[in-house]
Image 1 (tube, rainbow, N blue to C red):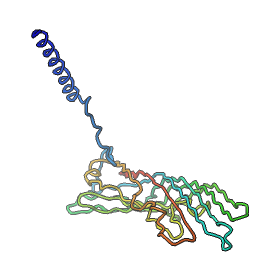
Image 2: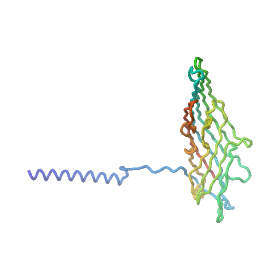
Image 3: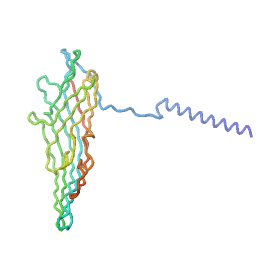
Image 4: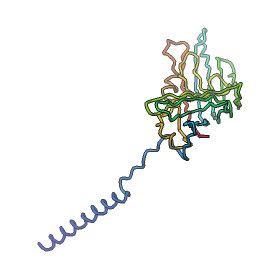
Length: 272
């Protein structure tokens, strides 16, 4: 009986050691508790080459896409008490852009100099490429004892950037030994509802939704790589607000509203 107990304990202890050993082996080989690395919002490739003057000049391209939608309803009672007048707007859009800059003289979207104390400079205006929006509007007005009046719209508008029709820009800010890129994009004007494109409703608030800063990119990245791609997204601080940013008000009318939208883009800086 004692031998049987000892044997059983030995088997249990051996099994535990094997399981523990396998666990340690798994950790050692990276098969257990593996956490994928954080993906950087920027990456570089190629080799940066400075000219004999000690200058590196980068061109810029900016492309991306996004969506926007608004659901707005306003209701007010008739004076005679027969019911409510109701206005409903259900507007939405998808948009995209592919922009660059035609070179002008010695201008650089980003200019780096090797001289001691030299600070990065540059900027770009988008006068090459296009912006496009596909908008949809479903607007309806109803009144007591009357048939609803509906307006439906679907429209695609494209603006081609030219020297005389610039759509947005890029500027840079220095942050220690790093560079922050400030992106601004304009969209074509559409005729599908008042709120199909990213804009505030009447009386509401919306920040500069199509403006955003990149992460701070170390200058050494551009001193090493000849091409750098930077992911930039819409800033939530400038995005849709609760009840479309409308201040509470005493009815009538009663207004309920919601907006949602976001965009993502890639800024490519290429030397040469």
